[in-house]
Length: 390
Image (cartoon, rainbow, N blue to C red; front, side, top):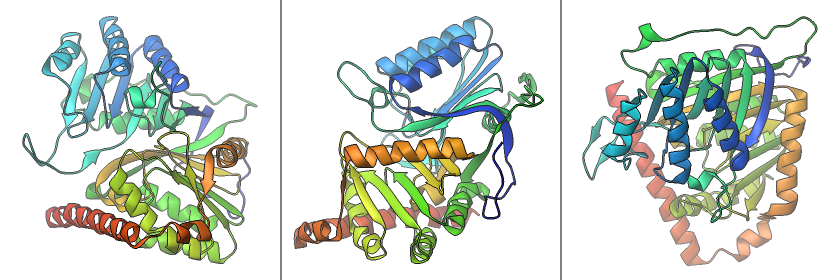
């Protein structure tokens, strides 16, 4: 059992679980997802940002349809913007098999326009006992195929109490079906057995949920020796930067793994505009080189980890619905740190102050500042609208 130290995370919201482990995107993730769906007995909740109609998407779809046909209650919710290209025939096939399907809808949208917060989280809960939470969408980019190596990403697998809490979170997004839910809470508390402490965390600024932001702030305040961050679109806002700077000032060694190859070039330019600020404060920046980096994870002092869909930027903080799982367990945290350090050692290039300065032409600086300003404008449009609604 993990010992709660004086500088440990707050105990609020943690639950004991029989198993918690990190699962990498690719075969490891989709084989496990396939196994969970095929072994489901009562309920499946799958909610995701992107659901592609490619080989990976069809594999997951076929598994969901088979589960529904054998009597499992299957609920699939996808984001109305990122998954808008799903065909009517594809959706009807799911519904005809008995799968509950809906889009997480925008406030305003047309063929060429979409405005509103987005369902950015990626979660699957089976039978209220097993769950996967992370940054992995349903599509070939996140899977290993003959033509493709999966983007770097992770999810956390949980067997235990947290899954029941996650099921309740998923149920809240299913409209008009609550009275039909089968709720079976599986107790995993066995005498003499050691458990892993974990808790679900939500960010939904419109609904006044800021739990993931609070978890990261707690990490920056509590850390005594080291912080590892891996973030696909690393543009923390003023509040997070203030706490990062404070942690670095008191001697915490902070290593940040960011994308060297990005699926959103505009985001990469904006991110590089901020490198100078971090380097001046002693934060180490490492660019991942092997493939697109899509992971979102933080850990500190070999004792605590957060994994999920939340990017360290203000779009995740204010404009998207996000879901993470915090894990407070030394064995789990040490394993995560070793994985991240191995990636740094073998698959990253360090952005040193000298390298950063040498690469900064006036044109590059102009592009980076322009991209940064565009991101700030996008954020303003989102948050201004939501403030008016609040």
